[in-house]
Image (tube, rainbow, N blue to C red; front, top):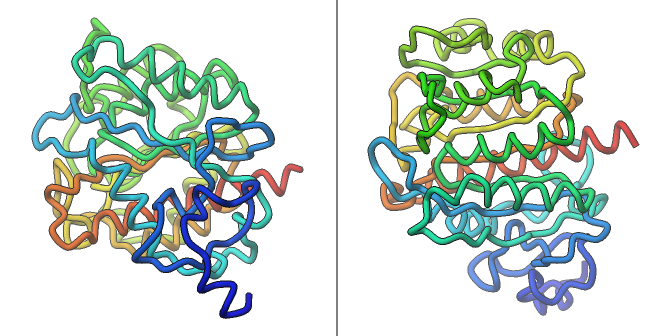
Length: 322
């Protein structure tokens, strides 16, 4: 692109015609949609809809992830204009990717939130798009999974986290970011035999049959061997990928509600996410970025990087199966 054309770009999230094309506007100005993608509530022809869910009323400790979607979008403006490194293609020029904005809900009616979120994602899937969700606390993954299971049946779950989030909830009435995968397994929307959790480093008596690759194992065997293990578990089943930012060590992502030492490094995560190209990923999310505890903005930057890799994984899968 000529310099004069690049220097005239601003607010492409609002002014772009269609959904494709790189954005060359200044990182410090303009409307900050995710990667400057076009804001749209019309998903006709859209391959992937990025949506924010600013909900943090299920946390056990520090709140603040309601500000996560905004922070991740802003941090995404720091991404290079060039195609994502190491992928060999450019999703934003090959696919129609829209920023669908945030989900609206009444913060004072928490009991209504789960069904509202399921309906929100159901609408995206009904339009023929996949979803990439920016959280928000990790509870949001459960209502999202319900919508995906309606379309695909029982899913494989690829879950990066410090915590297994399979603590018991036999009454199914807790809106809690530590019990949602207990509910997901018990209700049959994920198949534990072909699901895997990576980076775990907190105790839980019962992982409910979900395979666990803890953080120490990743450190000792390395990311390549970990990816080979993940692939064997997932097979070619439709897979939902959820990435809790506390999978990363607090040295890389301090701005989160429940940080745990001994976590994954940013380089390990970058290698694993890129080497997972080809898994049958049908949707994903990045959760638990909490800007009030993110004094340098590093956690939001990590969240934006992870979201870009999830976008690439989704589009890689779509282009391979086209």
